[in-house]
Amino acid sequence: MPSPLSAAAIDALRESIAGVRSTTHFNHAGSSLPSSATVEAIHAHLLREASLGPMEAGAAAAAQTERTRSLAARLLNAQPSEIALTTGNSAGWGAAFAALGPWRAGERILVARHEWGGNLATMRHVAQRAGATIEVIPSDSTGRVDPHALEAMLDERVRLIALTWLPANGGLINPAAAIGQIARRHHIPYFIDAAQAVGQVPVDVAALGCDVLAGVGRKALRGPRGTGLLYVRQDFLARLAPAFVDTHSAPLDAHGEPVLRNDAQCLESSEASLALHCGLANALHEALEIGVNNIRGQIDRIANRLRAQLAEIPGVSVLDQGVERSGLVSFNVAGLDALSVRRALAAQGITIGSNGVAYTPFDMTSRGLTQIARASVSYLTTDAEIDRLLAGIRTLAH
Picture 1 (cartoon, rainbow, N blue to C red):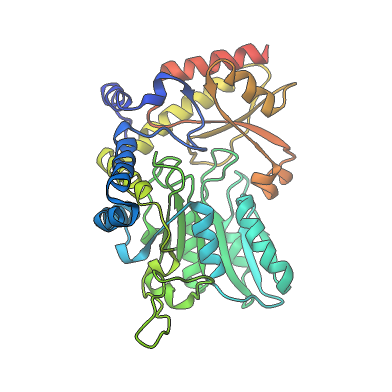
Picture 2: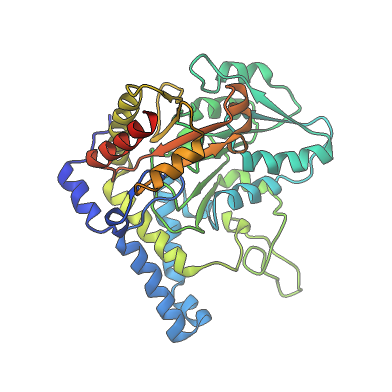
């Protein structure tokens, strides 16, 4: 079992984070606070670009991009050849989905009811024109996707199973590995949206049994915005036909013909911010040095305390479901909409998030929710910050 980090270790980590001195941050699921070393890594490369010229500095920093790829592979228990560096979670997930090729009438996509709204928009955009369908896998009594219900839905028309592992609208954690076992047994492509998982919980793509897994730098990893990680299983690459290629993903041969790369970089673009790659490399290094098991133990302790004490405040409803839970804590305050709660807390220097139906439409509609307030914690969150947030919510609830 993971164990929480010591108070001394947390204090030492917080010394390198400018943001903790200016805000009480509870929107780590939106974008977390980078370390000064991550910011410096970005700044150092921008200075190289200003000094040498962007193209020349890019050639000099090529090794840093490959370091980023190798660190990401370590984090996910993958091979570097299976990692594409993207500009964000949606960009990576969408590129992999588009590479599945044309859809046909009658084909089926199965999703958990917690699927991210951006992924649903991508799938619907294609499925509606082709006559394919998107169907929701039932959840069990705890709110998690039900693997047994999934297996009962399968037939030869199912072309994709898609799962948002840690939903954006609360603390539920879906049984991603159990879904993977079913997908592998039936030879059905399996995509995991791990935007909230990467850097928060241990991720082992081999144990998960996924073909594609998308993550992002700006959330639990505390990397820069505009960065993402895309894992594509090596044996699955041959089934993909990228919708867009360039001189990086499919360089021209001596006859002027494009030669598609045989690794995950076939889903990358030649146009990338190497400064952001440098920042992401540092953030990945820090996560690996701290240890994701340690991060998970700390987040679990903090989030459990926050949920328990929120539930004791009259007028506050804690909305998280599931058995195993993440660092995303969803709640509502009676008589106030979530945006008003967010703005009132912001006026006190406390940052939280708020979600509407568009973020997770199937789940929100199924549960009769139109909005939620969301306080998402990090392993950097202190008990004093929890006390400050609880005091602010008590004032609003009264």
